[in-house]
Image 1 (cartoon, rainbow, N blue to C red):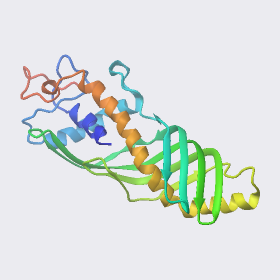
Image 2 (image 1 turned 45 degrees about the vertical axis):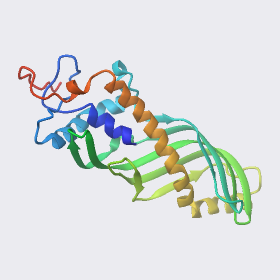
Image 3 (image 1 turned 60 degrees about the vertical axis):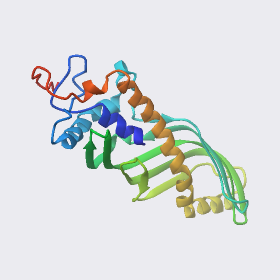
Image 4 (image 1 turned 90 degrees about the horizontal axis):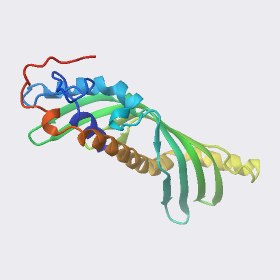
Length: 239
């Protein structure tokens, strides 16, 4: 997730527009005493573009955001979880709210915290799980929801809200009683499964944001994105 920060902070700003940079990428002067506020405004200005995608910069739409397969293998034999989650789509990355932002351009450091009110993912799963005395396998649709998802300056997520997870078709061919018991066990151990899924999901998101950040940073050099001073007093273009 750190790359999202690099993407929105390293590429954006307000106040001036260079002739070679699109109007939706607003610039911040390095000497601006309010550069942190400038960057906050810049991120908000770019939000619609993040949702729609920027074809001219090879930046895909982030809503929904497709991710690669997630593989989970953890726990001892008496509490083992093996799962593959594929065809993942993540909804909500562009709904983030900025809680705090501090910029140190001399050290090229950005300290920030933001919240994603609701992060929802869906896909397909294959599960082989052994918990206590219950062994079960299944496959089908999976979806999960994180609420009030808070990220700090390192883009390391902390779950401060609720998490929900649903696995469909669990034990569809193994009897109604076992299916109900298995689903009840899943619901009772939702936090365990969410904790297993969360790091891999974050890594996948980080990889996507890294590609997006590189697309923009490769196109425009740092000195153009963060000019030292005005270039012939060019007025900011808002359109």
